[in-house]
Every structure is written in structure tokens, then in C-alpha cells.
Length: 271
Image (spheres, rainbow, N blue to C red):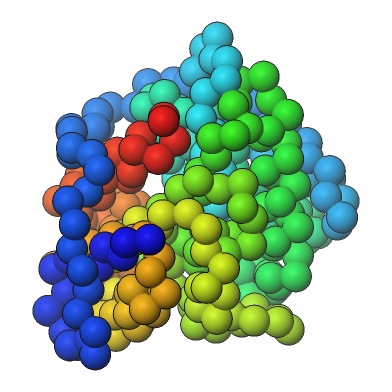
């Protein structure tokens, strides 16, 4: 396989320079106005009990590519639901599993505290259950599945790209802690050799987690292992640059990143 490396990351210098090849798609504008999409909450059975999942699909959809959308620390909140609806607006079915379903209902803990209780040993079977649910939906062609995620969801997307061969493409939005295990077991980084789908990474140069050195290390490992990937880092953007309405939002980065995400899925899921 061919590795596509980091774009616009000036430092650090990698021991093995990344190889660049033209991306298999053309960037096109993505609409900024999100219209209401048919959506619902489904219940997915997991080894840890029933798990809610937000499902957004175009009206009358049948056999479309499906995208598993992994939450950020805030859970499957308005931001994640909006991202699902945007994905649906571009002709995909989105399924966002609630990875906090094992917690007591109505938890008042802050997002970072809730996130700190997640364990990879639970995350992997939960996302696998979401995959099985997506494949059971009439709206979805189960042979054409992708995964994306934001913040912790970017980490999970990387983890799952190495854990479930059902995924044909993955997009990682500023996924931190890829070199850190959550609980017992391997880190997502140590599983890089098991990645079976192309990965697009979208990062902020000012993000402390992942920082530039983290991104360069991941790129170097994927390049060494000949994993298809393309990374972009945005000057002046930090963590959560996609989150409109928050101080971290960077419209220039967000407006460039979104069509890259959609075109990546177009390239690998519409064949």
C-alpha cells in the first residue's frame, strides 16, 4: 500500500520523509447551512446492556454508505447530532453510539470526568455493536462503512480502524491519547499494524493533545507500515476547531476540513 503523509506540519523533521501522492478526489464546497434531517434514537444491544444510538438518514434512503460517528467528551450532544446531520446531508447514513450508556442515568459529572471512566475493553464491543446495528438497517449498505470521530472520538476511530475490518475508510478529527491505553490492553498506536482502511487525519497545529510531535510520530509509523493515510494540520487551530459556538472554533480550518472528510468517504465508500 502507499502512504500519504503530513501536509503543512513544519516540525519536527521525520526520520523517514512521508511520500505524497495526489488524493483520489477533488475538494468541493460543503454547505454550511444544515437542514433538518430525518433522525431517531435506536436501541442497540451490547455486552454491557442496551445502548442508545442517534441515527440520521436521508428521507427514503436505501443501501447508502454508513458512517459510525464517535462522540467527543460531551457525549452524543447537539454538536455530534449536528455532525451526523451534516453527514446525512452529504448522502450517507450516520449512526452515533452513546458510549456513556454504562453510566448512571442523569450523571452530573463534567465531560472530562465521564470520559476518564471509559475503557477500551468496553469501547471496542460497543462500537462493534453499532457496526452490527448499522449493517442491519435497510438504509445502509453494510459493505460500505466508514468511521469518524472528534476529540476522544478521533482516538476511537483510529482504534477501531485497527480493530474491525468492516471499515473501508476512517477520518480522525484531532484525536488525542492515541499513544495512551484506556485501561488494560494495547494503545491504539501499538495497533497501527492492524489498520485495514485508509485514514484521513485533521489536526490543529496549536493543539496540545495531539501536539505536532504526536501527529508526526503517528504519521511516521503509518508510513513505515505502508498504511494509506493523509494528514492535514491547520495553523492557528487548536483542539475542537470544528465546534461552532465555542472559543476553540476556527472557521477557516473547519470549512476546509469538512469537505476533505466528505470527499475521503466519497472516494472510498462509493466505489
